[in-house]
Each structure stands twice: as C-alpha cells, then as structure tokens.
Image 1 (cartoon, rainbow, N blue to C red):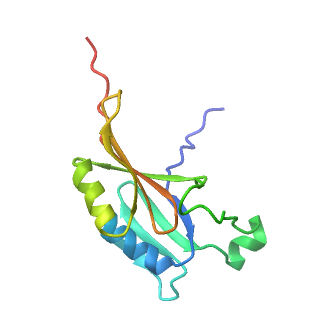
Image 2: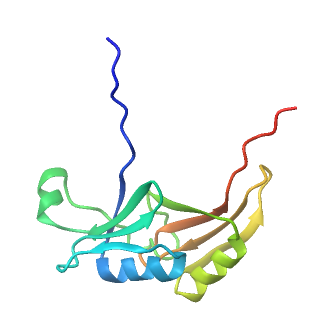
Image 3: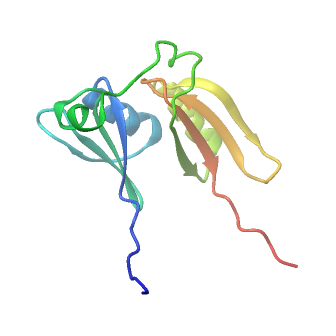
Length: 143
C-alpha cells in the first residue's frame, strides 16, 4: 500500500541552562532572528529557514518524567563534545565566524577550505555545543 506520509523536519530542540540567554546569544552571534521567547523563559525559538531551532531548559517535568533527564558532561565547555552539532550555512563564513567570536562564541577552528570545496569553521556556543559554520555546498558539476 502506497503512502503519502512524508514528514517535514520541524524542530531541533537544544536543552540549555538558560533559555533567554541562549536565544539572545544565537541572535547576536549567528544572526538568527528570534521567533518567540515565552514569558516563562522555558521555550524560545529562532528563525532558521525551513526548520526551527528551539531552546528549552535542561530539566523540566514535561520531558524528564517521560524520557528521563538530560545528561551533561562537566567538560563539555572545553573538551568533551556534545552529542549534537548545530550547523549554519553562510555566504561569507569568515565574517560569520568573526561575528560569532565577537559575540561570545569560543573559537575552535578558524574557517578553512575543505577538500570538497566548502569553507568551514567551528566555534562553541555558551552551552558548550559545537557550532559549524560553512559555506553553501555546491552540487557536483557533471561533465
């Protein structure tokens, strides 16, 4: 039986210690407009194209009681890698990287051109999450 079931990727939810601070940081460091920050500061959303980046507290009864509590590592800010990486595409990666660092992102790796033709740089956000900033990937040219 054929199905017309085709989901759209709607959200990436990032669990953070301070929702309002994280939303403000992403707005300033990465240029993402704020879509919503609720009055309780327990949910925030950023405009990011086809999908939404959402922030919610690390611990809340709605999810902890259903799926277990979010686990974090003590060294995530400086050395250990989180289990998620946020990636943004920019037409000017060098300017985006500079803006992110000037607005509080911790530098990890300055932008460089990769063998596949994409320019990529890495920073850590204020929660220790790795953020990859890359140029738009061009489709391969057929001869």
